[in-house]
Image (tube, rainbow, N blue to C red; front, side):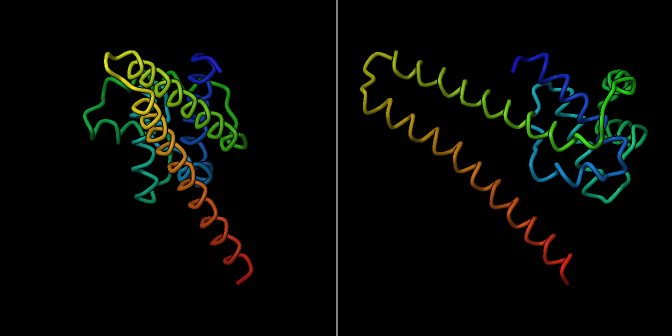
Length: 165
């Protein structure tokens, strides 16, 4: 997935989140972190959305704009206004989030590959050094995914229990 596709998905997701009164946010809040977004503007906007959602505030463009202003991010207002005209689907928010997360993971794996290449090309590096670095970095990625899956399992279990109680 190229950068333009990812940034387009990010924009669509942000719109869906701001215009769904928090419904779409419930689906993606545990799956995505601000760091999963490619563009810094999108990270800042998503962080503002997360803060509002955590405070149990209904989400909309105006409230997100106000939240950005509180954090001194007035430069994002014009950018935020430009998002209003995008086509989006609140029903697809979860799918947007999954694709954004996957792109984030691929970026991280690419970074690890670059870092490992740098380690291997260092004078004095041994295969054991490189393999130890590979293991450490890939384990960190896998551990993060396992934590995310466990969190999702807990959420689904809680949801099922509440439906059957």
